[in-house]
Image (cartoon, rainbow, N blue to C red):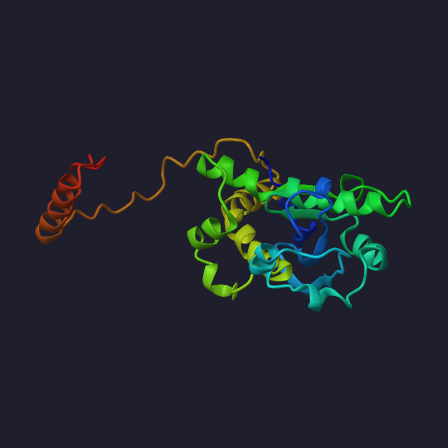
Length: 242
């Protein structure tokens, strides 16, 4: 899945919490969390709202996000936050983990208002990091897996899976997930700026200074062979036997 890393692109990293897993069964959004990123940098701007779903949640759901029925009872309805929410995300690229879930709930809420509000894909473009993880790792990965893989899991306290908390974590994951591609794009941009073809092969000059070759010492060779023996004991075949 292609990721657009335009330097002036406005990204909104988004997550929701809900009363269940299927809006067709009457489940509703209870929390929206968004963080803004421009030029791959967090701007500090966020959008966060708790929402009264007007239905009672089961304890199993409450245990996941920690939002109780009593806590949500005096919070605004979705109809009261819809306009400001739409304005915050309008025209941005939404970055969502498992976008089908969140976008499905957002569109369900928009439709319930019966105000002819635009649907999510009419307001924004969407990047689904769940699909990106499948391209990267060969199978879809959870946000928890990605956070640990990219070593950002300790940056956010996730005792509960709050929407704003998860959006902040996903922002860190997204930065690491796209770091290599952004570097490649930056290199290409520099070549173009110099008047060259970004896709052309750059050949080294024949009269360049030759690189110095540093051979391994006797102790390093011994250590290397010892490491290969450990790998062999584990039943693996190293690709660097010598």
